[in-house]
Length: 424
Image (cartoon, rainbow, N blue to C red; front, top):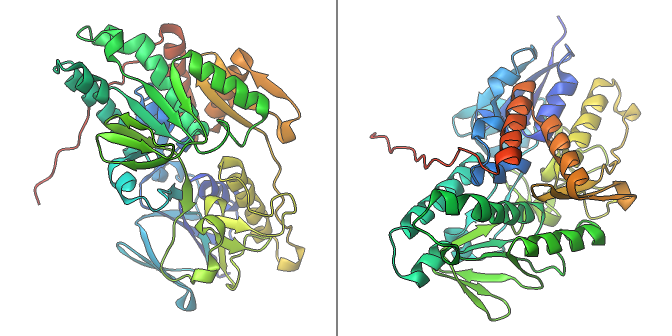
């Protein structure tokens, strides 16, 4: 009986699941997926969960259910702690695994740029837990504001500062503005419009959505400001003490709420050398996604700094499409017999898009060959994101949630749900 090659994939995001999809019918491999969560989730829609417009189960799904029909794949719940390349072994939080091929698809985490106070006091937006924490915080702040008579303290509770004007920051500020306009006044009769504070979007770049076209940037900024978002560009968040946000231009914002969407970098693991990491702490790989100086370790997506793609000398964008395409290319290469026949990775840009609010979105075609805005771009954004969800059930639920919001400008997922501390 032919000995199967054991492929261990660390991380069940876009790249990890796409690689499993490529290898699922091969009897050459047995695959083990390792993840610290027992579910896959769709990061581009975390902000919808955070703002109460979507339930968590609409954008997440259990790994074991996803893998039911993939007979050569098993799931292991655990967190990677250390890689031992010489022994071809990984140390997890609950044991160890040996591998023939190791694939690092570990994604990214929030980059606070060394600011300890911001890291301690701000809320990131990288996981389902982060999104639920933010939802709880927003709703708790509003409830508390209804009991406070001091207008300054009330305004401080209801002023939200979002650091980072990329897609996440733009989408968050837009949906917060619509929530303030259509929902809070209805749900909280104790409050008046003047009590609802401000929404600030802060970024050190010269434009919002700096990676997109000038047309997308200008349209998005104009629509955000029309919604009442105060956009501050060429400005950085320097500090936050839970009461005040300090900006690089010397200004301060009186607010209890700083949401961090300003930067990411890859996760670092014990066992790799310092020189293995490049820009953004990503593992340096060759054109086949093989980590340099290692024979059987590969990196994908946000964890990979791929060299050899002439269009992207500083690495590929840390978004879904490069991760999916890298995983697909690696899977096709692994299924080929000799590595001499392998195909180097070359990224195919599918364009980019961002949503600002209901009927308001922007979309750039590949290499900015076309530009869409307004309802057409919004409809395209909804379609693309629904089709990108992991299965039909998630797509149906997301479509139902969006239809409800589009029709009524409202949703019913505004529950403060906090896990109870279990006695040990």
